[in-house]
Length: 423
Ligand SMILES: [Zn+2]
Image 1 (cartoon, rainbow, N blue to C red):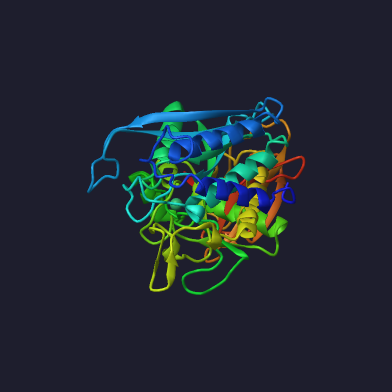
Image 2 (image 1 turned 90 degrees about the vertical axis):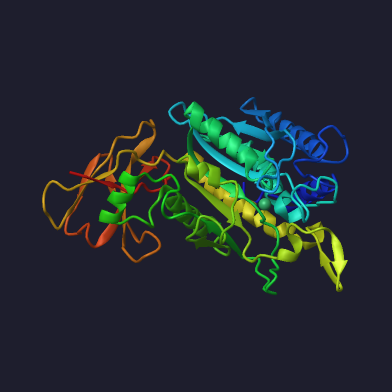
């Protein structure tokens, strides 16, 4: 699959999206050549073309709702506006896993200097035609394969209006009780030259929060008592992506950043985090502010604006490959174990772990992983068989962090679940 991901397709998508002039969420929805409506219809047709080759396993929908006005200066929606996400769902083929969902998104809306200027040219080649093109190319390649769990490829709108499309999807998922086991957003994944003059084609940043955005007061008390500020489900997801990246793309670096997003900034993963779904943001290694949220212009001999000439299409393909490797690994693997606990009934220098049995028919068993408390990644792993309790003899829960992951008969591993204490 990784070799099938083609930078030429990504370039074609980015140039096509730029050709609509602007994709501002407030721009025309009924003009066939200019504005967000033209981009929406083109993306819908592209996903449908992919779905037609997927043997009936992929469905595509325009998911629309009417956003009420949120007037400036606080809001960025002067008039009630229809927001449309384009959503392509590749259904999982294992009945025990098909309800487990993995979502990968980019936002197809764009902006120039003013978020409410619906008329200016807003090419948005990097922000975020790059992420949208990566998602479309992943859908093309992955739709030819079968996965146990379901993968949702999504292009959302209203990101620049304050994460509106992604918030709508995440809220719907929460209301309907969908089991979103992970969400990736790809946003600004195209520039390899930063405003700092550094050219880096071999690194992608993966932002993950340490403390869950939806943590309850009770969970916070437990965390203060046993640690775990570096062990949210989203952080485990980032570690999973780093491990998969090292296995499949050893020359490409997943740089984990221990933050929800860039300093004081946001993205489409946040509405998912706020509703309790594990999520991370992929973004390029260095920011280039002259080409983000800028009217296209030359000033003092400097070209401003988010133009395709500043996008490295080969790099976007690399980011798409890392995404596809991680998503495929997740969707082939069992679910992360549930009900994982460290038992604290007896005072002991051992660590007693217990968890709930997984439901997948091809489950082989479990692995206990551990690390010293100052290590960013898991450093040890032990196969313990198809059991639901295990004692790590001679390893104290005071001195190590532990986790449990599930493994299937093909060797596919789930992300790690970090345990809670159980008296
Ligand atoms: Zn963006």
